[in-house]
Amino acid sequence: MKFTRITVNPKQMGGVPCIRGLRIPVATVVAMVADRMAETDILKACPDLEPDDIREALRYAAEAVRERELPLIAP
Image (cartoon, rainbow, N blue to C red; front, side, top):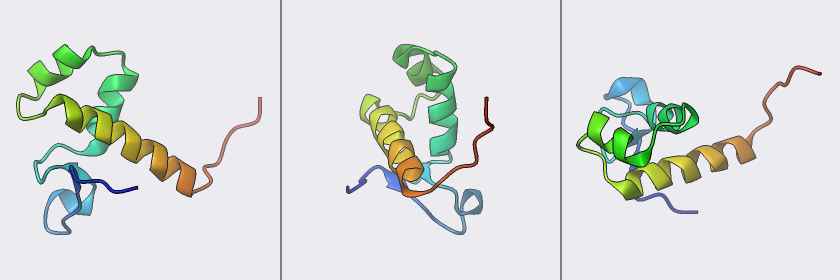
């Protein structure tokens, strides 16, 4: 899968994946979605974002989880 809107720069934001070279981490966008913010509210809170940025952030997060095992707490 190719990500055209996600950038990683070791000299920016500690090298965390960000949206299009902006100082908006993918994790921030994903957290906003997880907090049930509407797309319009996310775009108002981060005016530099575009709707496709949100979708690609979610695809990137899904791929990141798919690539590694995360420790889970047993029920």
